[in-house]
Structure formats: structure tokens, C-alpha cells
Image 1 (cartoon, rainbow, N blue to C red):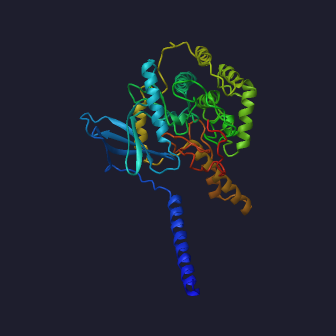
Image 2: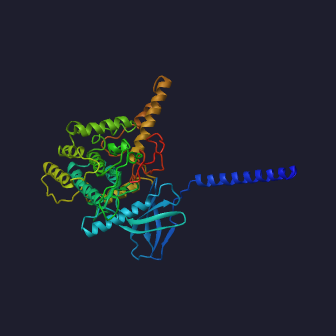
Image 3: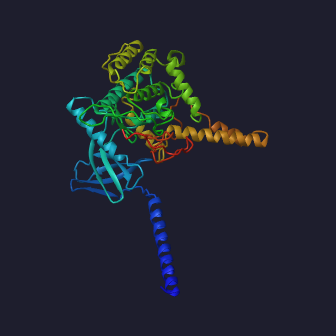
Length: 454
């Protein structure tokens, strides 16, 4: 080969290499490009295989996994309202599918075993070019929202009634073969007033996990050595903080924190004002399980301490004695009231419809934020004011006003601005985030892959 030919060959190879490099970079850019989320409007309609025509009415809320809308079926002459949950196609974590599975399986279990329904009914599901979606029955506001609308704490008798219903829902999930991993008042809603508002519904299964190796056999999956943090800092169990695998007993620990918070949104959990300090939260949770009688607020009935001590001795693979917990809760109710045990009256019975209308009239529609997210923003603002004060050598009138505006509300439930349900979280917020979403409540961590597939 002549030198001139060699030079031409080298130039062609170099050009080809540059083209390959450019092509490769374009592919990398395509991989890195994140899907863009667009909110649906009242102009959007979803045709479901000619069976339903779902027309969007209004956007209800947003989260890390998608959005929730109120929809109607235009092919149904009665035009009943439903809830549609969407998840963008191409999302890093596709969690809507597990919600669909859980709603289907608990629906079958509830119907076949004649259990009280504590879960939305799955009505329809499908895919579009931009997002996947499910349609389910529409329910009422979250317990966080109800407490805020009532502008007071729940009565203790009402809390026990709620605790019994939530226990029944958690037991059904465990029997079907799932753990929720994100129980909290923001993920528990009332039924629609006026007929079903005494019933509670558990929702948002974005970070739920199947605990059995197969659907037919109740054989537990192997315990993983280490897992990423999935949960809400205020309510998650100790295993979640320590990045350990969670079982049914850990789900019940989160259940206990939820019940304690329902007694009082500040006094119920001693770490409610320490959400910016993970170490302090873990220490206080450990102290509660070591000596619940000493750590529990006087507002909490002593029977709850017995439940905590029972859960303390359980191991990862152990099943839960739900009847023991139920009996302790019923004993607590007997000590608190002499009313009929079958009484389904709640603090909001007969008031909820009016309260919801008043809240709608007094509140502009906004994207909801979880309680913990708001509290964290509150803490950041207080820190900023302190830094301004120390830098200036004193506190101005404006700074004093800013500090006052950052204080926590007392007996009004969640902070102002928290209106609708907070959905699932990964990391630390009380809002709606997922495994692919890093939140403001915790420093970003490098994702650790599990060492076991089970």
C-alpha cells in the first residue's frame, strides 16, 4: 500500500471514529434524558378499549410517582366520579404496576372472605403513548386533612376506632402477601360522605413490597442484608432507618407510630419537632421501644405500651398476632368510654361534607405538600433567620416576624397549607416521592443495590 493510500485510509478511519463517538454521545444523551411530566387538563380524554371514555375534571394532587385526577366516564349516563392515577412512561421507577396488583389482589381477597373494604376498588387500567394509568373509586380526604379541617385533635375514642380499622386493613395486606412500608395519616382516607365517611381506606402503595416468594405459597422471601431507605422519616420503622430489610413486624411498628400521631400530631410522637435530625429521631424511637410506659405521652392509653412491648420481641420472619393487638385496642376503648362497641360514629360524622365545602371555598387549589416537607421548610427558614440574626448582631422587627411565622401550630393538626393527601415517599419527605426522587429531608445518598434478589 502506498503512503498516500495509507494516509487516506487513516483519515477515513478517523472520520468514522468521530462519527461513532458522536453517535455514542447522542445515545448517552438519549439515555440520560428524563421524561417530561405534563399535567392533564379538562381537554384530555382517555379511551379505554371502547369500554370507557375517561374525561379529566380536575387535578387532585401530585407526587414523585405521578398525578391524581378526578375523572368521569362519559359513556356512563349517570356520570359517577372516579380517581385516575397516572405515571409517566419511561420513569426510572415504575411503581403504578404494583399499585394495580395490590388493588386487584386485595379486592379479590376482600370479596371472597367477606371482609370490610378498606381499599379503593380497581375499575380500569391502561397505557397511552405518554403515561400509564389506573382508575379507582373516589374516596374522601386524608386523616391529616380531616384533622386540619376540624381545627382540633381527634378524641381518644375516635383514635381507637380508627386504629381498629387500620389494623384490619394492614392485616388484609399481610394476608394477601404485601407490606405497605409507608403507613401514615396522609395515606389513610375517609370514605365519601355522607354514607361511607365512617370507613377508612388505606392507599398509596408506591413503595409496598411482596413478602412471599410466590402468590400461591406463603413462603417468605429471603431477608436481604441491606436495602435503600424507603419511607417517611417521621413514621418509618427503625429497620428502615438502619437500611435493613422490613417484615410484617416492621410494618406494624409504622402502624403504631401512625396511631400515636393520631392521638396528637405533636405530643403523640416525641420526635415530631426533630425531623431535621435523623440521629435524634432514631434515638427516640429506640427509647420508646425500650420503655414505652416512660416515653409515651399521658394522652396515650397504657394499653398501647403493651402492643409496643409485644412487637419489640418479634423477629423479621415472625407473623403478627393481630387478635392480641385488637383485644388491647378494644380494652383501651372500654376504659375510655361506655358507649356501644359497634358505634361507628367518628369525630367528623355528619360534619365532613360541610367541612369539605368550606375548605374548598377557603383554599386555592395547589399542589399538595406532605406534612414533613412543610415542617422541614419551616426548619430551614428558622435556620436562615438565626444566621441573619447572628450576622447582624441583633434581630430586626422583620426578622422577629419571620421567626414567629416559622413556629409550629399547636392543636390545629398539620401545618397550614397541608390540604390533601400526602402520598408515598422514598427518602424522607412526607410528600410524594419515589426511589428515583431525592428529597430535601435527607442528604442525597448513592443508591446501594441489594445483595439478594429475594
